[in-house]
Length: 442
Image (cartoon, rainbow, N blue to C red; front, side, top):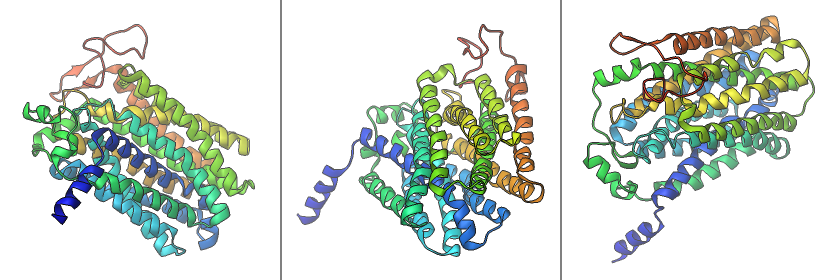
């Protein structure tokens, strides 16, 4: 009797599918806050622990290294065991990582950064697969996850700067840990596929479609996974995300440090990054509204070109104005790439059921590799040859990769069977093809 009463109580508290979807979006928002909260704190952390520019770059890049290591395994685990279960485990790790970063110890901070990278990589892999299952495996609900995360990225520097300035360097991470815990508990309520299935989910599964709401999938063959990797849209999305990761992480290091050296306070640095994130949010929301019209290889390539050139103003030597200008200019193309990349790679019908986790793991791996390598390269160049050399170390490889994307988007793609498919000439370079042109299902 008592156990049945407890079961009935838990069932009554279990959130419905729409509430769970909103809580999943909230998890992405808080992950964004956690990723950006450290940015205005970097100069003070470097002063506290006596870190050089290269060591500070390593502190910033540690999460990316962990994300790189876990992204593909997390995707395979999500396909095998269920995206929901894997995401809940990552959410718990996110709490642990924030608690460690709140501790007044360099060792705890470093360990917390590694654990955060693991949690962040899994959330952005299995969590994206979970959200994709809410609408039957398509990509229409993936864009809002990026928008929600960008809201978190906007709030993160302000949260980190203000709390760090007035309540101590550990206060922002402690607050984030509490918030993530409050989201994880209702997400964890209920554990059966029946409770997790959205309307029509079981019918889709019975018809051979994707399993409902993050349920375990049938194993995807190695041949199917190889076919996914060879799809042009997957390579294009991965390359664009690599540029985005390179610019974003290097900006956090070089621009934050540059503003600090110019005498800007921690809270003002946080507000500058939050202002750039406002632009990010506005562009991301606009791209979500445009939907399939911008979910194209050509739009992806255009955004990559603009992003690769976005840091050029920082080379002009205009002081704080030039640094903030570069930060603001880079926000718009980063938002466009981040919003369409996952939907572009997810496709519509070309992807076998159960492969979303693997694809998202590949994309996150490309992004994470850039966030690890570029801050280290930029930090080393800045330490040896000055800030201008650091920015050039980011701009030159980003431009080369963007040029490759433009060549593939405008000159034809090699399909999985070796056949070259060329886009038809259309009115309007960014206009999606009605039939046979470039779109997310190619």
